[in-house]
Length: 277
Length: 233
Image (tube, rainbow over all chains, first blue to last red):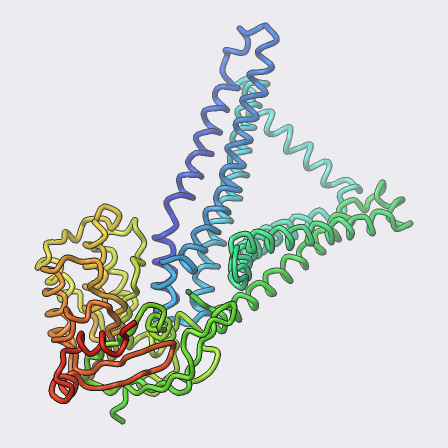
């Protein structure tokens, strides 16, 4: 049944996130080509800078549209499939609450991950166009090689001790973060249903509250690490990535805790508190 | 065990202490078509929702074919809510595939036959259909299952009289003697010819249960007349 649920879940959600990903790719290509075009050599007036800045802003807007838009769409989709009229079908399927939750979690996490990959890829694509403009088409390969060599030098220096772990932690954090984020808005919607009235507002309140609490804890951890007497000296030395790794570890722990709490909470609500009045 | 549905001391209290179902006891045997009748707010829909697992009771127990509401009973219960509940962007053919995926007892050929009889194009999207046609599609999906228990909440309220006849014929012809059908409706005259039993509900309690035959022969009244007499304001 889990496979069937995932199939139907995918069929019901794929269109809008795909369009959003397409919009970002189109924006990166169109705005990137515009930025790399020779037209800028002809524009020798103050308005050129404004147009250039506006282009970058529009691209940034497209990125936000993809990242935030995907999450909002998935959260709304979850609400509709579980607690609007569609919930009458969802909750009368011969499946367990665990299967229901797992299918949605996996589907939403895949879309969140695709959204992150899309944003990173398109930032690189856009940046590639800007580099093209700066160095010219012929020397782009040489420039890329230069950047790689510089990065290699930095990573081999004493300042970069622990960068390998940092990269591993970053990848794990992205993967865990997408699952945790999906569970957070699914959990927020479920908890919001416990309100007698204003259930959507309740869900938003839970989401904002948990996100705020995570920010506060992560910031507090950063401040503690930074202000400890040893760190102040060490930060300027070869412990930069070591410091970042500790912050990443705290963030990772927070994401895991949120994910587990939201999953267990959602499961309990679906088992004992579903009330489609 | 002949009792398909066993309801014991069932209670549901909504917010603000509104008691929708009040210590209800009821038995529904297999092979019966039962009319669940009562005025607005008497607890019919709440009872049906608890049977289908959409509401959690505050007190009491429900047993459907020996099981409490959950994945096992949901595989045996075919529920038609009083509202349109399919995703509007779906095509009718996609709905058939959806039901086929989840319900082992779904019979797609029966659904296609009924769609054909009611001249509904399987390739049309739900959002392009009228409210009445959507309700027909819903009923076709629900009645195309070989379920043990059919829960029909106001199944004919939104359709034209001609379609009502077809739907009621469908209801009678599509269920087997092992199954039971519970129909909640206000349109008593339309359905009373297909009913075996009636359950009158008021204020979340069972007021009376009787066979249609008994009401006609002993009371000398139609179910509709008897209902008006019992629930006279």
